[in-house]
Every structure is written in C-alpha cells, then in structure tokens.
Length: 418
Image 1 (cartoon, rainbow, N blue to C red):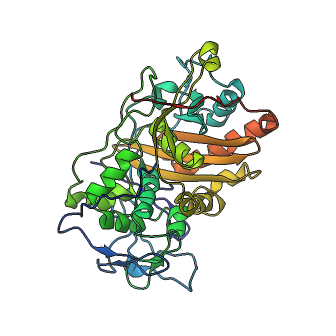
Image 2: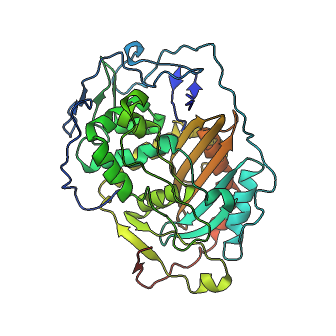
C-alpha cells in the first residue's frame, strides 16, 4: 500500500514540498464522461470547479495531516492561503535509510567538469541520492554523482509532475499565471501561487479539466515515458501509464498532483527543466565519458517544443518556490543569483522520495540541477532544495562563475532519434 506524505509548514500545507511540446495544440479529444468538469477562461476570469467545497485538498492519507477546502479561510485578495489541519494517530514508518556511503562507486567521471562534480559531491554529502548538473544550452551532463541511482528506473515524480501539467494547461489556454481558480467556496488560487506552494487541489483541478488523454499527450511530448539520454550506458526507462489511475485511487487528479502511477527518472526531469531553461529545445542528454568525447561533443535535438511564450507564465511560480515557497530552504545557503525550481515529496512502501529540479541564471549562463533523494523521514523536497543551495555555494566559493564555462559547440545541433 502506498502512503503519501504531506509536509506541514506551520499552518500552511504544501504537500509535495515538493517540456512542453509542440505547436499550439490541435489536440481536441475531450476527457470522458464522469471526469470532474472545470470551466475556464483566460485573462483573469474565474475558473470554477464543479466539485463540492468539501473536496480534500490532499486525499486522506493514513498517518498524515488532512486538509479540506471547506475549512480554508482566505483573508483578502493576494493573501496567502491558510489551511486548517488535523492529525491522525497513525504514524508512517520508514524502513529506508536517508544516508549511504560510497555513493560515487563505479561512476564514470573522465568526461565531466571536475569543478562541478566536486561541488555536487560536497553538496550531496552522505545523503542517499543523486545530483546531476546539465548545460541546458546543449544537453551536456556536466556532472552525475551516484550514476547507479541517476540511471535507474526512477520513482514517482511527486509534485515535480506539476511542471508538465502547468505547461499543458497553459498551452491549452485553460489558465494564465494570474487566473484565479476557484477551488471551492471562496478559496481561489493562481498558477503562480500554486506552483510556489505546491498546492495539490489546484493541480488536481487542472488535471480533471485537461482529462487523462491530454495529460498523457503532453507528458509524452515533454519526454516522460522515453529515454532522456543519447546512448548513455546503463540508462533505464521510466514509465507513463497508458490508462488513467482508477477513480478510487484519485484518477487523473492524483496523477497530476503527485504523479501517482508515473515513474520518472532524474534524467527525464533534467531534460524537461533544461527545455524550460533554454526556451523550448528538448535535447537528448549526453554524458561524455572521455576527454575525446568532450572535444568532439555535438548537441543532439530530440524535438523542439513550442513553449517559449509559456515560460514567463511558469517561471514566476518556479522562482516563487525558491523565494517564499516550498524550496525557500535553498536561500539559507545561497542567494547570489535567481534560481527557479520545483520540489516534490512523496513515499512508497517505507521509502520517501525528495525531488528538486531547477535552473539558475548565473553570470555565465544557465545551469540545470536535479537532486533526487531516497530514504526515510529526513528525506523530502525541501532537503533537496537545501542541498542545491549548497551546490551553488560550493561553485561560488570556488569562483566557478568567474570562469569561462565550457564552450558551447557552435555547429548546428543534429536532430536525432534514439
């Protein structure tokens, strides 16, 4: 039985503490009858949710805080939503350890940037996880610490799935970043707020509006369900299901808030965030293994995504996550330049997952970082964000951003199929 954690910050519930594809979609298949209806119009019009005001903002999960929108109180337009919560007696027990030794054993490192790799190792410490740094301008993996985990079959994306759902809803014209979405009664939230605070009810609502077929269509376009790397030895494949999660388990809404029934790899999240960071090019990620590989590196484009107009709509929420939302722990270690990201936290059979995918506007261009953690209670999305801050701090202390980055290959990228 799967148990999903809800992370409680004071009275604010941010469950899951903690791309897009194609030309303007002409994908017109509607979701099936019985899917909850959400009507929406852009440019500030209210999006209404047909469910009752008592629909839980996080599904009741044994052993965790439960919040319902019927007890939500909002004080003034733009005020931060506060959720009344209660605890159950049952406590979730974790059997996995959040710490491990010899994380780098077996890593192939000759083709990596040694300064970036050292900073990633320093940041990860003895946390059981993987840290990946990517140049989004060409898809080159600069460092990949704990390659065994990075190339594994992956895990539930938890709240990082909200990035693909947000892009899908924006592409379909369901919302803009400032569209107030009615989540029951007088409770409204915008996309920016929902991304920053990782609000599950908001993304459940968007998911039901989109319907499973459209959600899956965009997820596949963003690279879920296919290999992210180009001939990376040992890379395994995450999965995106062909059928909607049964209604009794939350249906498409749960798939869009927690990523339940989806398996995403750290490389897949890195490829998605890289496409957001570079304006819409979904590169095959490449991991040079030798100095010769670095010298002859050639970018390879998987496909071009028509998301450039959407990036300003989503980036403010991603930056908000770091400035005041679920990833604000990053700023405890680093605030020298902007970082945009998304956290994710959930658990499965005694193991908790903590995700943070992000990109930073550095003095030498953008860099994408994915940190994925597995373990017990100390493992969650904000911890991954905190470690990302330590990664940037280590690079800053080594004067990395004063140096010239690895040169980007000037030749036209090769469009390939893997």
